[in-house]
Length: 258
Ligand SMILES: C[S@@+](CC[C@H](N)C(=O)[O-])C[C@H]1O[C@@H](n2cnc3c(N)ncnc32)[C@H](O)[C@@H]1O
Ligand SMILES: Nc1nc2[nH]cc(C(=O)O)c2c(=O)[nH]1
Ligand code: SF4
Ligand SMILES: [Mg+2]
Image (cartoon, rainbow, N blue to C red):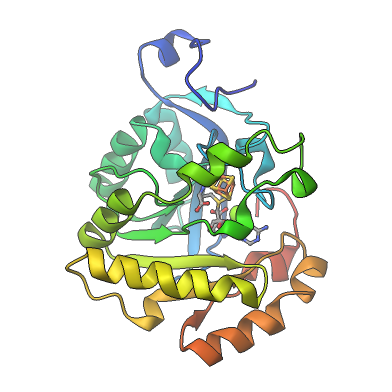
């Protein structure tokens, strides 16, 4: 069923009562991105996002949000059915637009899971997050009319206004173990990354090391990554930042549930 990405009329009693979460998918895979790449993990993907990156590889949580409203008990039950996993990755869409994500993280923490939250860094929540995997969105993510996957640039202004919230971003960096994972389209993204990392360092009491800054090639298929990964690897070496692969794309391309 469709899921509201902005504030709209609730469609179920649970939703109206503010209970549960709109879930697009739950699946077991290897963490494909970042410092925990390769770790067996259960992924919980919420639906709905406050941004609209033109390249979003989870189109059905952002541009066309779909999913089923589920209560936290049933999500925990499905997570626990993957008995080998000690790690849970909460992603989306943007999982932190949902207040109920805090309850889910508290329950996962109480069950002893390591929690990673994949977030665009624009919304702060106080929750048991073991790794805040923040992917701040650069100017090159903005859906201008020429690269809008759905319309004719209707989201350009809103995306541009909301893609960076320095207060939310710096509070997250101060409160959680963090990686800053930038999607890189080409070398023209690097001055903005360097500037943003400098602003985060100035705004926080935390040391943000160069190897907490990750460059991830843009591409949702192997073929697309073939056009970006070498250049992004070179840029990581040049700037002293960390490169992260997209292991799941290398292994399984864009297959669903991976
Ligand atoms: C779908 S997002 C969901 C979490 C959150 N909304 C965010 O953007 O961080 C999950 C991760 O995929 C990255 N991503 C999305 N589309 C991508 C693409 N085409 N190429 C590379 N990374 C992409 C995001 O930057 C983020 O790190
Ligand atoms: N295997 C795998 N690893 C991932 N790491 C972050 C993902 C995401 O979509 O947030 C993701 C994903 O979709 N699949
Ligand atoms: S912020 Fe994340 S989920 Fe939202 S559109 Fe961008 S990549 Fe997709
Ligand atoms: Mg993904």
